[in-house]
Length: 235
Ligand SMILES: Nc1ncnc2c1ncn2[C@@H]1O[C@H](COP(=O)(O)OP(=O)(O)O)[C@@H](O)[C@H]1O
Ligand SMILES: [Mg+2]
Image 1 (cartoon, rainbow, N blue to C red):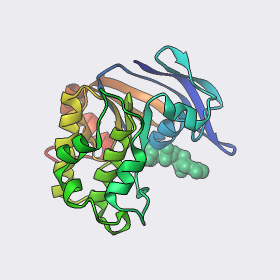
Image 2 (cartoon, rainbow, N blue to C red; image 1 turned 180 degrees about the vertical axis):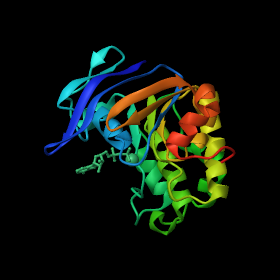
Image 3 (cartoon, helix red, strand yellow; image 1 turned 90 degrees about the vertical axis):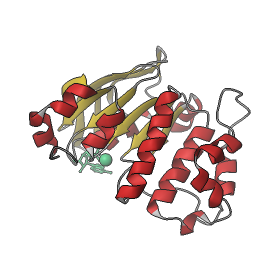
């Protein structure tokens, strides 16, 4: 299952935000989508999942053109988007939120039990209302929900946004688990070095265009890239 984005152009009204983004995510890869604030990272994900469809260009999934499909049909094909910010059902408990997200009985997929064992913190919080969770706990719940939807690829938009350093390191452990499981991931991050720790490859986008693509190890070591992304070594 490969995700291929070919030369997509996306607009908000008359504002031409994505000006020909192309990228690929191969089966089992973790790919980082990096760039300064406003570069078009979130819009790229929204275009892939059909929430802000591209006006030109093509998105292919497993060789099939999915551009133009409504968002719910794209989701049904196993492309799970985990937006930043809080999106869980606030008045339901953690367990109810997870139960709602569970799709079918995919024997190869993640069961509720497995999610609760992998994220023991969710188990501890299972009777807590989602509206009462901290930012990090919400993030964990969203990731758990996404895994239960039997995803073939996870699109994680700025998962560390607003999280404390301790929670960021927890999140790093979950990303490592996803990688061991060879779950395909496309991740955007302001914290570029965090994403590059887990990524195989990275794209750097600027003003709606891909400026650079390289193996993550190379991006991690490039002082020029780090300066561009506004990170200092050792972050
Ligand atoms: N809903 C919207 N309406 C109009 N402009 C938007 C909207 N969302 C984002 N933009 C603009 O599109 C550009 C890309 O935004 P975004 O994809 O959110 O960037 P990133 O995720 O890289 O920070 C920015 O200039 C932003 O101001
Ligand atoms: Mg964004």
